[in-house]
Length: 519
Image 1 (cartoon, one colour):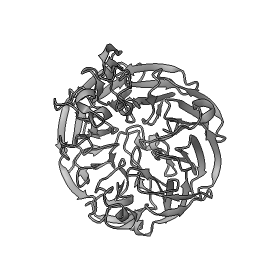
Image 2 (cartoon, rainbow, N blue to C red):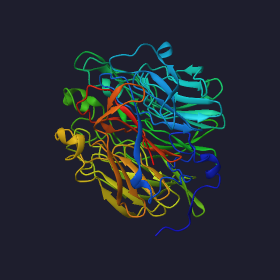
Image 3 (spheres, rainbow, N blue to C red):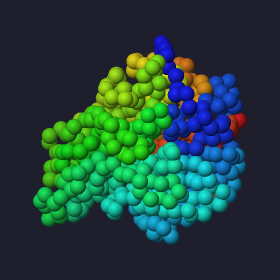
Image 4 (cartoon, rainbow, N blue to C red):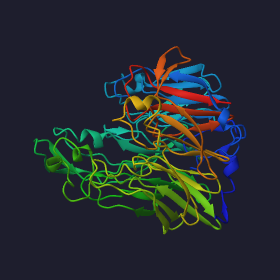
């Protein structure tokens, strides 16, 4: 039983009307909850139907991770083909499209300039980032470019963190492709320094930067002869949240790539005006992990091989800022399977709940936990675990961390629908961040099925299989795959929007799809 749990007093004004989901986090405090949704309810959810699909161009190894923002009947979303779209939220009709390639360059085989993060809409602007590390501000009505800036000089920088706009600044974490390219023995691994940046919302000028890592220097050579650099890593994969009461920004950080130092696998509390560190809690150390720890020769190219410290146990999830009685807490899930709560003022650990257990024998031992984010509906916290075999959806008491109920990924997820044709690829796993509205929890799966559960008891109320063919309203045939990580369901004004274009890559010769459901 939970007592004395309340959202911060400014929350309703921050979130806006039922016709808005204006940033990835749902609101400044990261709740991913729309309390104003009154059309989709436990009584009506069974009538939810597909209203339209929008299909992206088919590109090799592409995926759709850009969670839409919806404001005043317009949906804003990025695509794998270096396009950013404004669509009519009710019909999917295109209002305008912005081409990133004049800024970021042509689409590459590795799709580095695709848009994976979610947009944030504030005033007359829409903000987002891309796979080459550029942050953009467009006029939300016309799509005209206002500014584009690349705040990180390292060429491996990309943006999976979604922007948060607060007091005229755009806050975004900087992540990197180096964790993947480190799998190439000839790559001079690694020099990237993860960071959190604040940009002027009007001009894109850098206001401040908080680096997670000290600068890297050459420390030797790899067996291939390539230069070796250290320390490196600390990518900020996740999106921040802010407490306007104190002006404190909270964000989680990634693991080392080389070396053993820095603010890795940590939760940081930063002064939102200056970027100065107020506190940090480092929840795993050491943790040095890249693709070189999987292939081609971990003994030679994974610095932590054989030492049990190649964990990938970072924070890919965003925090929730919650009032519990007279205390503000920061609640956040970790990829290793633990959900944490900290005192927002001091960083003191208040409780920790083990949701799933790391498997040291797996190539990625940190893939069992909370990947992208959780939701808070004013009463309970909701979190889902990924490849925990099975993945599990949890309701937690925010005051104590006690598990109130838990629901496994449905047993038939991989044996029915489109995923059944690829049994070797499918897992009972929950993929995206959790979202919620009054009485309902929204969570997608590795199987390509989108689920809606009762928030009261975790009972499954509705599902839809996205691994099937669709005809896009834009005239392009599409086919869904796994429900997208990096974001989650967006629920606005009787509509639910879901990206169906993430792991695993079920066989398809068509582009992936954005799906819109309504009553």
